[in-house]
Figure 1 (cartoon, rainbow, N blue to C red):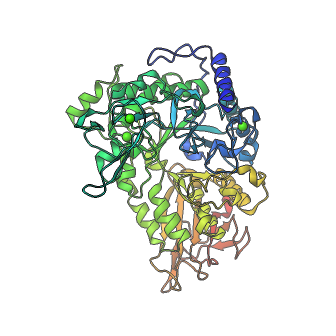
Figure 2: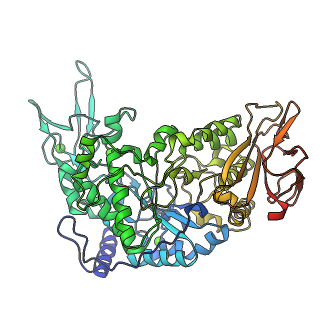
Length: 620
Ligand SMILES: [Ca+2]
Ligand SMILES: [Ca+2]
Ligand SMILES: [Ca+2]
């Protein structure tokens, strides 16, 4: 029954699209492209909202096959039609860009867990039928654009889903084999779907010993969508690293070339065919839908040369077709700013390596050093969102993090990119689908501070769906709640607070485009004077005369002020300037005024865990 439903859906889509590709690397003849255009003038103006499509809104019950809403690890029924219907909700919140789950066809279910998240690619050329067909995706994107909302799709280039096994014992079947007696030798369990890493490649073995590289065998189970990958070039064994499962992420060979735990088969991203297939697949999704950017999964598990090729060839191809200002930002799940920032720097490889990389180039545009336009600010997640706003550590951690930014992140714009240096378009987030939600261990006041911070600092704020509804799920999958459980209420205090911040960010150019300067940070904690205070100004840069001052008290212990040993905070506006708190906090309502003293200092006291957003009265 369930299998038949799936096949009916698959046939319907194939029928609609015309025909299935047969040759390798052929994507032509499938569908009509749409007119591409740049829908975003300046990415710094955007407020991104992250959506797990399966969990956001269910707008079409005809695609609800295999769903089980009683388990967090199963399909729940959300789709693009649902997202389209809820665009007014996002508009009301102040969202200007959505980042959605990967759009292609996924492994449907594996080992009793479903591919509802979209990170288990099977067919890069077709839509995930749980989310809808190509027309539904196009309609949603078009409707979003009409409402001034850009669309970013999630892309995976590191791996495919659990699509083959290593036939280690050469019997043609996927086995779980056990070796050793436990007396003279260790007992060893070997799962042919997910054997441990071997730097030589997974080896086959018989009773006589090793017998050369283990063949890989693709599985055929339409009911769970375990089928050979598409495009067909990915059915060739040499397209994979075939070294088995990563057990030590600190070991570079394993980090880059091991199968991601769960049996996600690692592509050989140094091969021209793989590089070209990924550019072809993902450029095509843009050409079919006019989406505006890529959020790129697991970048630190992919060879660096791949990012040069992928980013440059995507930009060149899309720009030729009218899609400029395309934004590509990556996810390196790591707290080290030097590692994360390295993907945003222009870095030409040594001559020999460059010449090898250029062998994959089929046009006249040779490889340069350019990589991605931005990255998730994971170091900030750990060092600020968690340490300062959730756990109350000293605010000089923020100053330290910011001080080193120019050293770690790219400071020049990529050719044919967003027109902005990556250091200006870091993606600042509080929650995402891979970490426990802030409220799992933090409190609402701390969450508000974090929201104030990411919505006013340099870079792009990214709100994870449900944060505005005060969802508090823990680790994956508990942090992937159904948004419909909230009733999409727009009256909750955190929804309203986020909305107010988004509006203020739109109104005041300083909050989007101004340079950033720390005017107060403290290494004190607990009951010490000025503990928890952090203050920064945004002005200058591309903000004209717009000015903003943000003052936070992250301390939960006591009211605090930016003053230490009698020396108050100095600010960058003229003596006598009247600054207005346009946000309001627990201690003072919106509209409260503060006057800069004759010596350029400002006196302000903030209750525990609260913040103020100060704008000159003349600019209010
Ligand atoms: Ca549905
Ligand atoms: Ca076997
Ligand atoms: Ca890899």
